[in-house]
Image 1 (cartoon, helix red, strand yellow):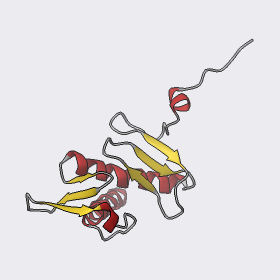
Image 2: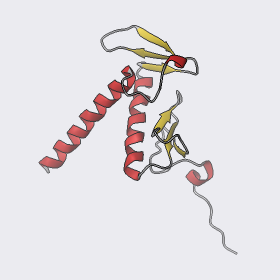
Image 3: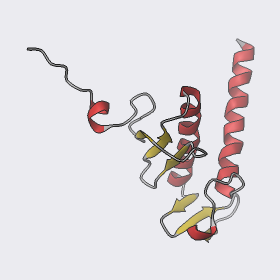
Image 4: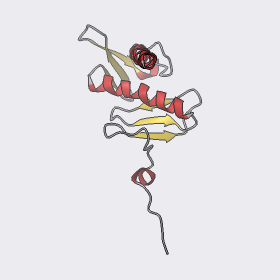
Length: 130
């Protein structure tokens, strides 16, 4: 009797398409307006109800947060978020209870959104040149 062995992503429950060695991506049921989240270890969770394109965008967004974390620009835990402003060595500490993490006007979100716009602009220019 033959049987089929599960793949490593199937056994561990992660998204093989979007996962990389530096950051594992899991698909989970998240609130409707939440596309993705990242923890300080680089584990990314994306909303399983998103389209393939939205999942790719969410992963790219969270990977930019991962870069902020690795660059020492962003730190967070259950109690506080800390963010280093551009051209400054000072970390701004904000208690988590005072933050709505879905807001796009938080300094670390504004920074990521600017980088995403640059990436999409470069991709568009590259496509136009081909």
